[in-house]
Amino acid sequence: MKQSGARIFTTQAGSLPRPDHLIELNHARQAGEPFDERAYQERLGAAVVEVVRRQQRVGIDVPGDGEFGKAMGQRINYGAWWSYSFQRLGGLELGMELYRIPAQRSEPGRVRLTSFSDRRDRGRFAAAYADPDSGVSTNRGGPGMRLPVCRGPIVYTGQEAIRADIAHMKAALAAAGVDEGFMTSIAPGSASRIGNEHYRTEEELIFACAEAMREEYRAILEAGFVLQLDDPAIAENWDMINPEPSVEEYRKLSMIACASISAGEAGMAPMSPTSRCATSSTSCSRWTARPIPSRRAMFATSTSGKCGAT
Image 1 (cartoon, rainbow, N blue to C red):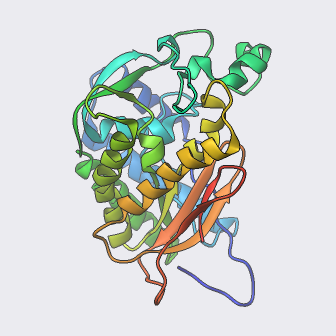
Image 2 (image 1 turned 180 degrees about the vertical axis):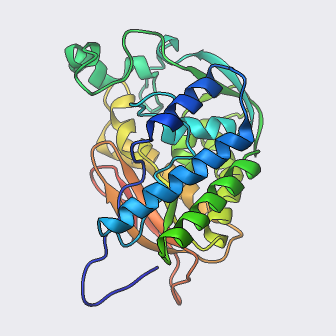
């Protein structure tokens, strides 16, 4: 990864607004309308070139592809970073709508995630979540998207998609005259927030996601990009446990997600953690394939429950 002793390099968080024509194409594809995949990839590639050029023009040192390969069929979509993985993992079948899934309350000695509709913040801030113009949710009173359920061994099936994403990003960097860029991928702890009818425990499901997603992590790193692992679940899971857990209980649960990131890099060349970012709704870490001498990536949680490389 680029280093400088003279100034701080600039980058951005990942997802950027998609152009209207790309949103329209994605909407048609998601609606099952007749679709020309080759023409779509050409338009997608051109859009990635343009968004990388725009980042370069405004002074971004390490640009991303805007996550344009993670399809959005509408202007505002808070879940594309997550739902893209549903099409890249085998062993999943569509289940119940997101907001119709029954609650799963925690009990003493058994802390677990409840349903999205049972999140504590949805009860505390019901008026905001019910207001379609508040900006806190894109759900307008409907049942939400159908959430996948794991009903077989999880395997990675997104080889063609990640190859296309990588090819578009390489072409964009070359067109903009930029020598380094980053790509995002979902971390195991966030990818595993789906239904589970196959694995004995949720922990087994998380580590199965880690093993499957490793193929995508490896592809991004071997292509020469900085890898950003997106793991909002480490921050968001706090209000998805009902009733509220103790800090120690939440730390213990979060450490499983942290350990799954290490599992996701197993068998690959040593990776260097290069940065960490965390907000109330986002946690992510960036990695390169450059090893740090005599130092392995370690993970720790702060008292806030957020995980980061140290």
